[in-house]
Image 1 (cartoon, rainbow over the protein chains, first blue to last red):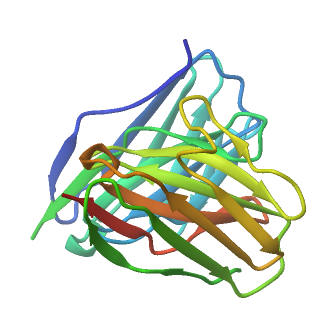
Image 2 (cartoon, rainbow over the protein chains, first blue to last red):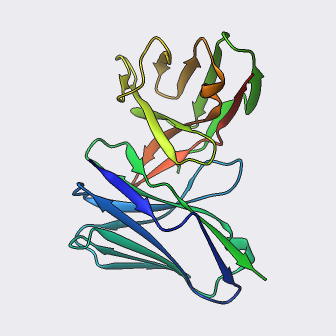
Length: 111
Length: 112
């Protein structure tokens, strides 16, 4: 069956450290993968997209990698801040234009 | 970018009643999507709504329970019918952008 899994329910790190979130998928061959941020009581907000032929993409303090052999994406936030505390969702294109979302990882950055 | 508004933002409803959620977009879009987010869970696609045609429902969701209207290119409604406590969720609409999707703020539904 098709599955998208994100690491652990919650990730707690100290301010200034790098947060690394994982997204693993099985039985998909996505043309691209996206990462979203969701704050409590709000809809998801798009952060980054990485295509199947891209290994890495950066945007300010964010970095995403995409390994189609391992079927894994890593999402890094460098120099993390308490304001980065949120739930982060990975989402795959599954050829239907709508997205299929992972379970999400809740990140808590401690000051 | 697209700005999406939803009404109501939240509601508390009695078992057996129905609620219609409205989604308004500030630009014309071909496809609109309705998602459900149950407490502590991720988003699950309910259906895709194209203007001028019947909505396409995902496995586990049926038109009788979640009828959708799409009268024009900027507006859609989702009705949650004959509600039960299991329908308590956040309901979100979204639209496609360039390599992204834009989401509304969601409607938080509690069914007693």
